[in-house]
Each structure stands twice: as structure tokens, then as C-alpha cells.
Length: 612
Image (tube, one colour):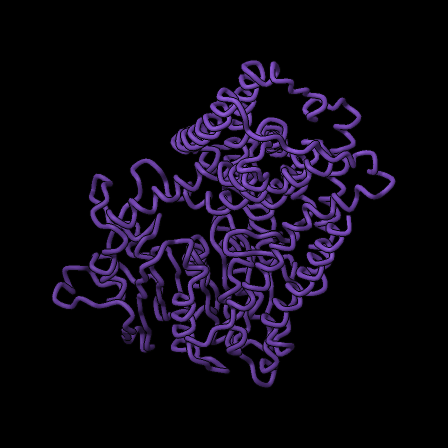
């Protein structure tokens, strides 16, 4: 317990350092005021956003302002790199949770464009602030955040006074044509830029009349769409002899106003743009050219990576707490009875047990990979996941991962049953002694320990957010505060996650806990890798094909490989958590319930909610 106390104290210190460090970066050591806003918008819905106000922005000296937005299935913190760099250059920045995301209201399936999915409602808020220069308001968003920018343009055009003067689209196609297919300039006199990933999983392709792709994203700049955009909506036949290039600012007088167009084409993938210093540098350059930076600094002078390092440190602390908090609770009167350390691991011996051990890993990985691909190609599942058909499922992406997890839990259960009757029972495996059949009281007691630990760990997340307005995250993995409705959403998918994580904990600990080379940690590391093996192989295969051919694996949509990025890390970490808690309790249900609950909460607080 002394050792656990050390790690618990270290995790708490790391979490505090993470929050303080991240806060110092995003507030410019106190020069930028950060507010967590929640208000009823002009669309009659509640929106959540972070507002960053530099001390130089005052009613006497109003500053340019920019609304920044994340993409589909994400939240406001995914724009951390952009709002850190823009705010320190003197812009007022509003980072929104689009409707249906984060802690904003759910998004109605029949009103996907409402309030520009929230972006234009953010513009209206900024325009009411006395320290904002209403003649210099910009918008930018990544992926579907850029679609929200496109949604916002007609709303601004229809308003008595146009408020948006600058638009930067990131990894989403501009509007090229009107309803009749004619090339147009829908952005009018506004400055418009585009950051385009040459290996974008979704956008920047041109198609034949039959819908077949003609060009890959890496060839985007040569397409009629790109050239028309850079020529302010001119038809391709009008500009055949004037091919324009990337990273060059082009200007033209539109209705007496000088407007600009520029495309930054980058050799990277769609999700990487949110974490790309090159993309952030182009964003800085664009808005300085368009709006003028009150406190200009070189585009290469970026410090958001420091904040990312601190929030990643918090993510590590969170992982340590998932082990140390329940082990600390074992010393309390309420949970002392569960402190029954498991027996030492035995060596992997015998030909048949060894065959089952290694074959089980291989077969489980194959089932995991194949089932994921099959689900991704199912029209019925796709209709639910992408909100094409009305359903009772509020979060399609989370449901997809949870359903896939449950299928693999059932497959693992079958494999474990086969192993038990084939050799483990004869070899003396006692299911009660191993914790597989502990009885209802120990199982419920272990569940109580797991849930108490979840509450305790998340209490720290909420406390640090309250004090410092920061969370724990690294790129696409984020642990953040959530609104009360997320508890109901987590309960919706929790049974599916429980089926996987409880069975996985039983498999890792009661059946596959052995020493390899005389060391148990090798077995733990091997099983952690085995948990993530199929997702890792699928991701490597997808992006190897993409890099070579310029296109994705046929039939394997890009979003499905992107969703696997956090899954790879989560499955490996939960395997380690499972092993460490089993060693302290001999009860596989503690880790199974804890892992399932944590994954459910993290998932629902970082995705899209659609209502029908």
C-alpha cells in the first residue's frame, strides 16, 4: 500500500500540474481571460462555448473576433491549437460546441442547419460584445465545422447587416456551384481560405456524372472545383489558361471590395490537421492577412504544443488514478473485504494450454477485425450510425463501437468456454477461486468499488475544470466534464460495453494470466497488444493503401479507421488496468465494470447527439 500511495500522490500531482500548466498557456499567464459560457442563443437553443478575451480588447479598442469550431463527433477542445494561437495574437476567440456536441443542446435530425449548426449563433454573440470590432469577424471550422461555416454564409447574407468578413474552411469543400450546377461565388466580398489535406478521407475529390471518383485529394489543386474557387467562382472554361497555385493569395475586386482567396494544400490526413503546426501556421497567416492581428507574431512561433503536453500529462495521471484510486479504497472499511490478492501467476505449461493461449489471441484478433469490417459495411447499421433513418439510438458513433465491443465479448465468451471444457477444468481451474463465479455479494461489492472509483476520479476532472477550465487530452483522446444528460446516454450503451470489458477481464486474468520467461509483466504487455492488435492492423492497412494509391481501401470508409485511433490506446490501457486491479482483488468484475463505465462516459462526452 505504500507503493500505491506513492503512485496515487504522483497522479494527483501530475493532474494538478497538468491543469495549472495548460491554464497558464491558454490564458497567456493571465493576459487572456477565459470564460466557460452557456447561453440561450438566437435559435432558441442552449449552446456551450469557451470565450477567450485578450486584455488588449476593450470597448475603446475593440479587437477582431473569430468563431472556431470542431468537426462532427468532437467538441470545442479539439480547437485548442487554434484558439491558443489566435488569442495570444490579440483576437477575441469563441470556441463552440456545435449543437449536438459537447454540452450544447442535442441536434434535431430535421434541422441540421439550425443556427449554422450553432456557428452563426456564435457570430451573433460576438457581435454583441462591446470589445469586438464587428467589421472584423471571422469564422473557421474543421471538417463539419467548416460545413457549419458554409451553413452560416446564407444566414449572414439574409441578415440586415452582414457580420462575417472572413472565412477559413479546414478539410471541407467550399461551395462551388449553385442548385443548377453552375459555378458561382457564394462567399461574395468575404475573404475565404481553405486548408486542404492531400490525404483527406472524405473530401476534395471530383466525380464523373455517374458518381465515380476521377481525382484523388492529392490532385485537388488541378481540379475545376479548386481552380474555380481560386478564380472567385469563374467557370472552368473561362480560366483554362490561368492555372492558379496553392499557398498563393489571390485578390479580386468584388462589388468594389478587395477580396482574397487562397488554398493551402498539405500532405497530411483529415484528422491530423487539428494537431498540425503547419495547418495552424497557415491559419495564423490567413487571419493576419484578412483581419489583421492586434499582436502579430510569426506563424512559426507556436506554443499550443506546450498546452498539449500538459493535457497529455493529465491523461496519463487519469490512467494511473484508474488503478490507484480503487486500490486505495480497498483500505477503507467499506471495501476492505475485497482486498484479496490473487495467487501468483503460474508458468504457461503444457502443449494444449499453450495452443489455446496463442490460438485464442490470434482467433480473437481475427474475429475483432472481421466483425469491425462487416459492421462498417452493413447498410442497416450505417443508417443508424449516420442518422439516415430515425432510431432510438441517440449517438450513432458510440453505438457502433459499443455494438462491435459486445460482439467481441460474446466471441470471447465462446472461446473461454471452449478452453475451460477442453483443458482448464481438467487442469484444476476453479472458477470460484479464480473470481469467475464469485457469488452475487462479491460481484455486487466489486461493482460498488468500481463505480465509487469512477465517481472519485471524475470528481477530480470536474474540480480541475472548475478551477482552471482545462481537461485531459491528447489529439483524439479526451477526458472532459459532461452535462447530466450524458449519464443517461452512457447508461444506454453501458450494457454493451459491460459485455465486452467484463468478459475481457475474465479472459485476461482468470484464463490467460501466466508468466512468460518467468515474468508476468511480459504476459500483461502481450495481452495489452493483443487487445489492440486488430484495430492496429486495420489502421496500418488503411493508411498504407491510402499513401500508395491516393485512395482508401474500397468499401472501408475513412471514418471507421479514424474511430480506431483512440480505440487502439483505450484497449491496451484497459488491459493493463484490468490486470493490476485483479492482482489486488482476485475479482475480474472490478476492472470489468470500471473500464466499461469509464469508456462509456468518455465516449458519450466526446461525440454527436441527434434527436428525431
